[in-house]
Image (cartoon, rainbow, N blue to C red):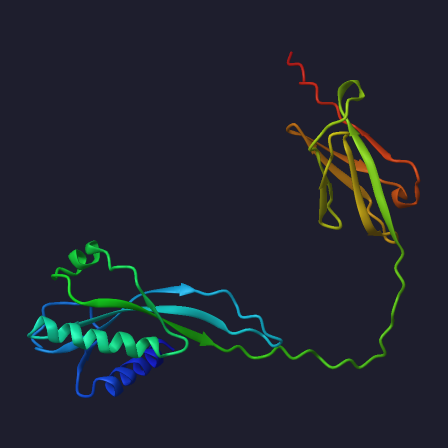
Length: 230
């Protein structure tokens, strides 16, 4: 795909500046008296587009666009013409931030007229075809319920910011300043069978028996006392 976008930009340069020499190599002290450099600096990954179909993968290709000529003013005019031409492209961007001097030092050449072009490159992905439904759709009514409770520590003091997890449903909640927690809209059948509670570096598992049918809060007491060593 990258050879395609290289060719696309080279063809664009050829239309804008007919007969100009185009190089994909890093800037160097070449023998050409007049030319344009199109060096691939790096890639930036763009977030997927929001579409009704499967979004394509997309990146931004960053090219260092340079120009040189026997006469500096001619190199300036050459680059200026290309910059204005790039600004006319609807999906292209021209970065206004100066190219770092360290980059030219890495190339081992004196700074020359240049800009950075950001050009999108997209790769379409085939749509995922869902298998045909060969049996009638069966709808089952699922009853939902709430699970609420309180986590207490020594002397039955409420524990704030304790983490309560339901591993089977992959959900979790933190207790409020009163040690209370709540899970809403949980399936009654099959309901959760156990909770996991983590507080102050301690962890405990609590077995549950029909917790969604109870109107009383679930009280969980944690022993946070340090174990005595013999």
